[in-house]
Length: 205
Image (tube, rainbow, N blue to C red; front, side, top):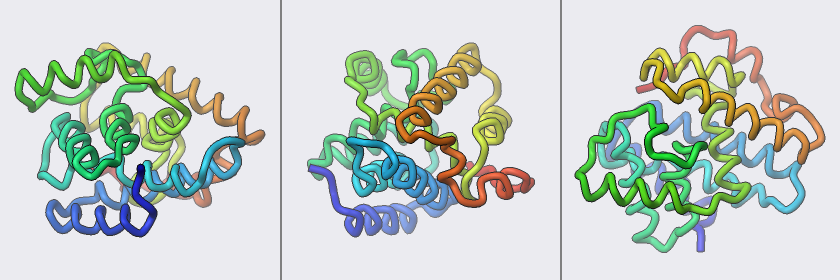
């Protein structure tokens, strides 16, 4: 069972206190984007989408890291019985279900790497996994943004990788999927998306 909104927000506040950073504001905008889109899609809960979006980077509570935050988040949520949130802590980084498509550094033990490799390959994604993957690319710490703005933001910080373009293509496919479900452009559901995208600041570590 997943936490309610109040519990998830308390978890983020505590995680931020443990490791302050703009990742927390990014997470809040991801959560809001998830809720805004979910409420326009039949069969999805805006409340659940908000909570799952808010918790996707909760593993950053453990400190500054690269891909380690994925398994830290998985363990944090699993320990509390938040099974779907735990999955999304890992799945949000793998819109392509192949560990080799990562753009980060696996600053984890060999045992943890193998666990993540098998987890990603065998996870069954549902619309909530896809929604968080999409919304992770629609949010900067300063607000909502066009996908292309986020693509550039991430590539500047992490560099170009062999699967960078394939990852972009997958996110664009997910965007089209949710636009069909919602019956409108996702950007219509994200207040200030164009204005915020034109701002120069916004990147986070």
